[in-house]
Length: 247
Image 1 (cartoon, rainbow, N blue to C red):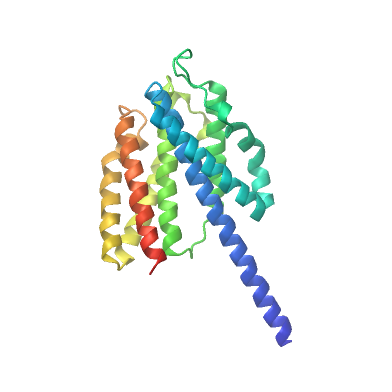
Image 2 (cartoon, rainbow, N blue to C red):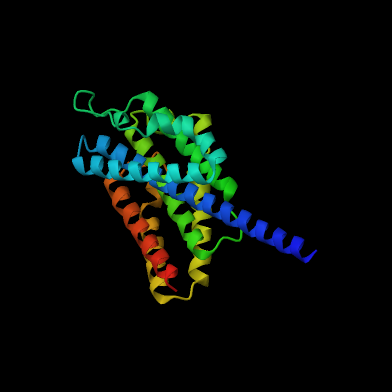
């Protein structure tokens, strides 16, 4: 009986560890993918600034490596993503050129939107209420990157918010921003490390500075401002997570 109980406990611990790893890989893949999408559209919005092509290449390669790790760890989860991922991650999809007026084709835009929506939906289904502080910070970073990626998509489209259909509303910018701010406030009130508190205050300030522009697609799309600040926010959160990792 004792052996059976022990084996059951070990099995449950392995299962929970496996689930946590899969969730972490999915989060990191979604984070890198949304960063790649933002850089993809920034390349188009700036009419071919090479720095964004480089940033896109780095982020999409990182996202692909994380996808391969996810596939190895949880092939069933990856199987749902693989057909669409195979269509969007290749280098040939970086297509805006001078000859096309740096316009993104409707086909590529639709595929990117569909994948981002699917990733975010999967992410919301895997959130555990008892996640640790490090994971909570990762989710805040992902929320901001997801919102930013959709913002750059809409800013790049000549039809703006009118280009979004009912099927694109998995990403609800107002709801996501509201929940993200609540999570951020709770972390700020609970964390005891002074350096992390300072960084999270800076995160809140920078988000407040760009929030209205990001969630209200009828605003003037200040995409340079948004891109700079969302990158700074991601750096601040990454630094906070690094501090937590060594405590």
